[in-house]
Amino acid sequence: MKISASIYSDKKRPLEEVIRDLEAHQVDLLHVDCNDDLSVFDDIASIRSWCSLPIDLHIITDQPEKYYDLLRKYPVDYVTFQFEDLTTALKLPSDIPGKKGLAVITPTPIEVFDDYSDFDFILIMATVPGQSGGVFDRINFTKIRQFRSRFPSKSIHVDGGVNGEVSFILRNMGVSSSVSGSYLFNAPSVGHALMNLTKREIESHFKVGDFMIPIEECPIVQLEDIDLRAVLETIDLGNLGFCLVCNKHGMLSGIISSADIRKALLKSLDQHSELNPRTMINENPVHLFDDNTVVEMLQLIKKCNFPVMYMPVVERDGKACGILNFVHLIKGEL
Image 1 (cartoon, rainbow, N blue to C red):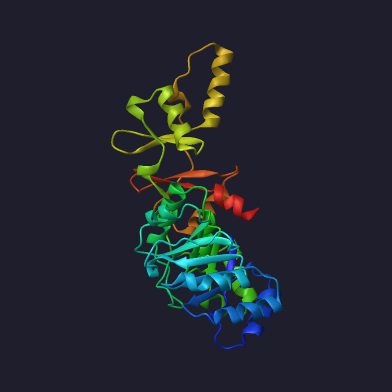
Image 2: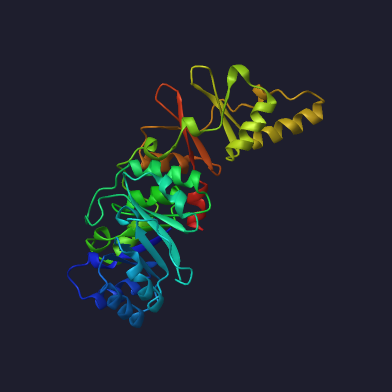
């Protein structure tokens, strides 16, 4: 996950000093907020003379057309327009360079992106826009998951309240870029903050239940009605490589993975027996509780003597409530 440094969050130093510091610490992107202020492009021109770091421009305006010529003259790598300030649907000219994004605040449904299918990414404002040092609203974990399901080919950027723990969770959810402002510049040094945003050891305030895939979106077969076709179809449609097996009361009976099916198939070929899906169930899978913290989750993973790609999540009484998938985190760490 790329870290986009919000350059105007440092109120103490001249802009050039801030940029030089960020460049020295190899930040990924320079986030430039433009609250309907054309003079921001004077800063962009200066930044281009100081360094070649990618510029991530966020424009809040009800008149986007007045920025088109400036975007042509001073091209940026990413340009985002705030949805809530637009009075009509935004139609960017095709000759404006850079990747295009739509920013939305927490209350705005992600379905508004339906009208911007030609854009490259969404920017989810996880705190109140313009409020430095705000706290990440955990409902945005759900928005991220919903957006990825609805628009799987689009990238997700997040702005607001990103600290070390939130950064870890966002990486796990496959977020491409996160904006960091006050957290980055209020630390003892930019380097110290960047280390916290990318390290694997983190403090913990959120629970597994805050960002798991909820049970209603999980691939599930019911134990009482289990058959091989249902198992195969559920795993195939779920696209996770396994399915949960639950009884009629919603209690987790175990999981069946593609590997379990392969092993059962090899065994049946040797013994000339029929495949019984009940014999494929791993009745004691490694699992998490929904009230486990992120730190407890990491501690459990470290204890496993095999690669962990996913885990079922249960309530304390054993009722299935979701899944954690670590594929995005693994990709993000490569």
